[in-house]
Length: 138
Image 1 (tube, rainbow, N blue to C red):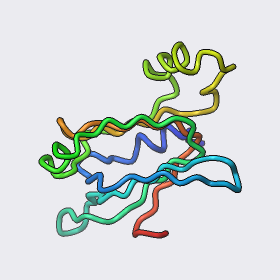
Image 2 (image 1 turned 90 degrees about the vertical axis):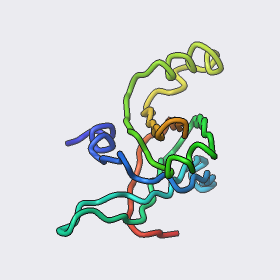
Image 3 (image 1 turned 135 degrees about the vertical axis):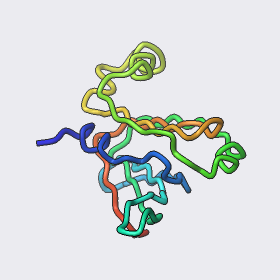
């Protein structure tokens, strides 16, 4: 069985477009979702084509966004790379800094990162899981 990080790292988001991001509070579960609207480049028999997709990070606890919106537009909203890890420098910095008084604050969470073509910026999400759907469901 693949882990959450293995599934995410197989997505191949390079050159896809980071269109929009939103945060939704899920009151029934007392958690948050971070939703990213994408245009994913997919291989077709005649070459490549873009397809609308929604990437949802489920049960999020921490979000860090550093976007240069003008730089994002200049670079066509393109994603350079993405990754998921269980351990990272940012995780350690959060646990030593703002979250230091909490007991294992990020246990059970994965660190998802999306890096845009410079100078577009980056987004970091600590979440328990993710889902990718094609089309633009509500």
